[in-house]
Length: 171
Image (cartoon, rainbow, N blue to C red; front, side, top):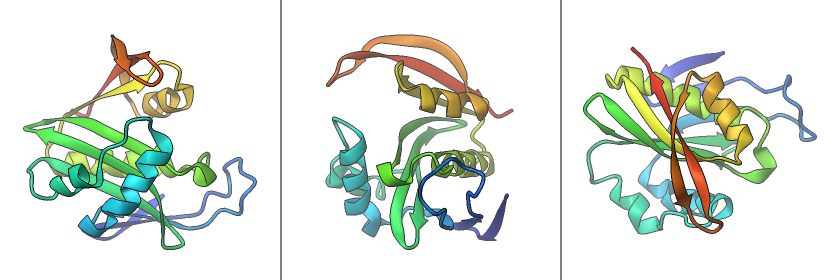
């Protein structure tokens, strides 16, 4: 359960019910700030073979339509999610959680907070691509109400792999 502290902050409880070897720590879901770009870039570099550059991340702050959230655990950036919106539709551009903090519900909390934010912004549909082999992410998206809508052949590089296209309809 989450409580809204201010328009830009969401506080999350601990994840004692999650399977993990680490002691669960409180997580804060917050709007991404421009000074988070280097840490988000490091996270994306850890998680993806072709991460966004720091410059590309910084450009999101001068272009309309980007909405980005980060997860902080004990002050450390441990997760990121972002969308690019146009009208009442959006595309999830990236979701990432640093390896030591996976399987603790951070991705689920980021996605839940993003869907709530989308509703506040009048976004009714969200689309995404996910590697066919990424069963954990597919399960997360399906549990959040995303449905499989198609396949993009050879969408990913390093390694080459098809993407599942998924869509969420918040109407």
